[in-house]
View 1 (cartoon, rainbow, N blue to C red):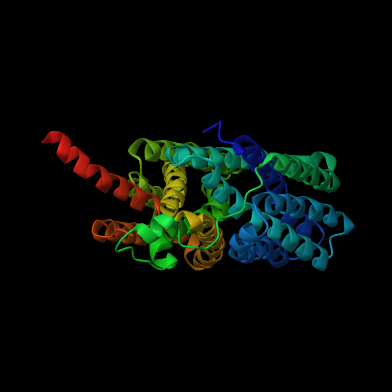
View 2 (view 1 turned 45 degrees about the vertical axis):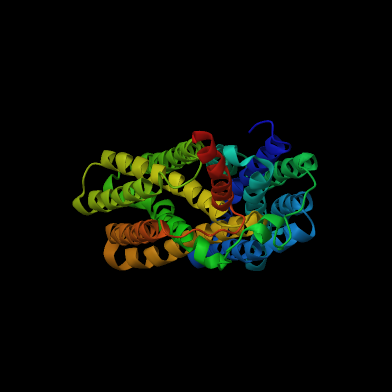
Length: 421
């Protein structure tokens, strides 16, 4: 894995870019509030960022085919960094929203590019661990960047954070020079596809829908966890709630990071993804349900530590399983589409979950929001189980990993029979 050309520079670029993003994620809304703007505008700064991110993700696969990974990732890093300096111009509403949207464009192109590039650079037998290691770099960047940005604001001011975010993004841009200059494969039928008798083309959405729904069901609950769990903990324990709320987010993030790599290692060992998907979804359902139960029954906050470990581990496993399942099911020429779909459903789920479950919390308290979140995870689990049952009879023989393994097995079968005779 580590010997794959461009793998290490890609990880460094991703870590630096996500570090730049994490530094500003909590800082921009705080700056808006301190400037006298409403909570709605502060929330809109993140909402505009995510909207620009999702829109950009839809068009990134075409850009990767046209320009290649290297230019797109360089552009992404620059779009994350340069607009950060734009916040130095002031805290007017137009300035906050405009530069948040521009940074969202960079973030959207980056998230699709890095996942797809890993699949292009690393041999299939190491793909699980490689995507897991990608999650480790992203997770570490977030664990450092999120609290560091707020700490620097309190000690050195907003300008320091803006310059630091731009500088870290510049590191990502520089490292992109060492990324191989390759383009995403064009949408053409390969020789293997043409030789595969009886090959059937299936619509992309049919192949990615189930893993997409799986990641969305968990990311919607994550939207509630990241947005409301600290406040819910504070209501539960007014004395230690502030410290414990931050600890809970770290526990969720750390568990997700470790579990994502573990799921990838298991997938590599088995030769295909899927082994941990259903167990992880069950654990995620239990974790979110336990959060709701603790808040409803006013139990000790220490029960939330167990709930955070269960949910975080489940979220990390489902992240990697969903991405690998998309790579596994789709043709090799659609790696960038798989990455785009995964990122769109991940980010859209997080945003929709924050909005939808926030509305539930306003009417039914925080415990009600987490009960609804657990129900959403349960729906995703039911869809995955149903797909697992009917999927035993489905083979999309169209130049994907499963199809290639099927062809190899079929071609070797006559030789095995002859040897036995």
